[in-house]
Image (cartoon, rainbow, N blue to C red):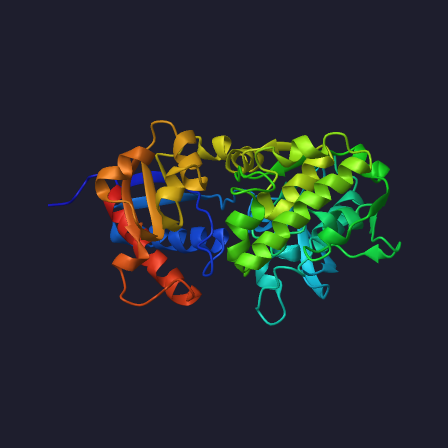
Length: 384
């Protein structure tokens, strides 16, 4: 007897974040799509894949923007310890995306060893300068993955300000030099004042104190207890110096939610008049998530680890929130959420690499991609 059943066709939106340390969001999406498409030869039907690699304002933001149609522009900046590093921004003719991670991020130390007191945010400021040369209407400041805790001192030195010690010597931006600031000169570049600045971050910490940048994020950057104390004192001194130099809102902004993002770069961005937005939601809008979702029957999202932090508002949670009534499938390197909690994020199913191997895939890009292709094929089988 001949089977006259019409093969099924399903349209899926693949919208993941990166698998940190292993694959970019684009690589995750491509591997899943390859697996989903491989099911076409089974005779059961076809999965059409709409690919949308995402970011939430952290590392990978430039890559995600480029994958969605922005143009990559390359530039050399000062890395976290002053060495030249190749960086890139994304630009679509109107909006430029500049990120901390690929300019002065934790992964850019020459020997891989963090330097919590000496790392600077200057490279990020230099990337902002490069973006300004393209005459954008707005610049999106993506702040995740910073190596420094300098309150944006380095960034501000690249954008027109000079910090001086008691003897009048110019200070380089770094956590170590915060306590040496005696005076401040210069002014913001005119081009910057006429450009809309968007601070994309989901960090809500203030600049200093028990929940401030040094206390909460310093240890992740190699800071000892003594370093944390020194950095916190230094940031308080920075605020005092800025107040004395005429920044009337310097003290108030230090307590603002998000001032502590990226080791205080968020604070400097607020001083420059940046508008703070949710990184996850802003990037969903910037990358046209709603339009790309139109016509899809299922959304596949994920990140390296699905856990309590995911539920607290990381990118997959934002994707789930924006997906309405569509079925949502999660994919991760690992999941710390038991099945009974999937509904808190409206997930119908979660697939993890850990279920498919006994090996550690977190630093193995080839293994991760192969496992994602297998997962994609299994997802297709469940859909067709």
